[in-house]
Image 1: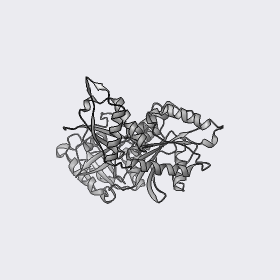
Image 2 (image 1 turned 90 degrees about the vertical axis):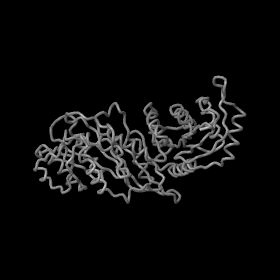
Image 3 (image 1 turned 120 degrees about the horizontal axis):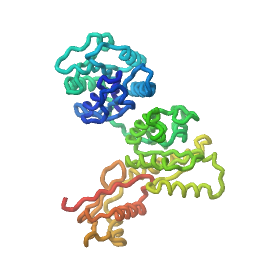
Image 4 (image 1 turned 60 degrees about the vertical axis):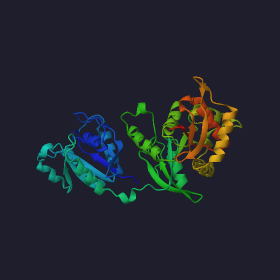
Length: 432
């Protein structure tokens, strides 16, 4: 499990400045006006040679202003997710009712809490009312100038559990898709228990849910991500914030199950979701759910496949499976397909066989000339990678045209089974 640290507090106490200081770059918007940070941001920080994740949240207040409820809800979600909470207060002010609102939320959450007393640069004394919060561990800092932040990072480091921070060897699956496509129902079916809330209301799943499953004695960690919705409609909604968490789940996963509602028209946005997974270079299975609700004839499935291939032509290697979670149709076939794609991802090809294929491919179709010169591949071997990755030694990679790179990938796919996974080709000059 990751070590998650949440920065919380009332508006304008310097959370985003501290966040930027801790991650070592300007990521959160810093502005002297309450409410600028509305969503929660996730970024990695490194201290004493180890990584942990920091969540920056919007300021919690009881004022009746626009977005306040969403901001408070997002902070509460961050607190629930976090392993440690850093409560940021303004050291030059007395404790206010907003600070007390935050501490009450923290007490109810029963989380480990430390206090960062901000804005006390130059050894300024902080307001004594801060002691009334009842938190033993407090760190006077100046996030703007970096004073005391090293001691704060040491305190955070000591509070985290590094024994559970080692990466496990589980093959990780993520389930993504538009709201109400059946992601949570699929998770429940795969693990044979009701782990995720299932509702007809789109977007019921706000956060990612982790579970372990076994398929033919092989163990997997499966992540049911929050429903992804159109960004244009989510600028201030809870689903917009859940999008960040879904991206994190994608980044962590080894294989993505993209769930599509068969009863809805394929949209440009369905393709965009696949694009999100592709950006992370993730293997993909297209899971068409609710197939039981479709009026079918002998050509229905073939026609649907044609539509999908047209919409998802950029991932033509992704397998397509039609299921019904409600009727338990083809769930076992989906499990078999997951195993097959996992095998393809982990497939290792002998160097001698690879070179035979590439040599023959060059003889059949030599690379096009570029300024009178042609790319020549001298050698290929498979190297370690999260997806099948191949190193090609060439005379001069400047002569490589993207169409020939695509041709080489197609040749590898025709000779070896890489269904469900992208392929990474790395070109290196022989004299490098």
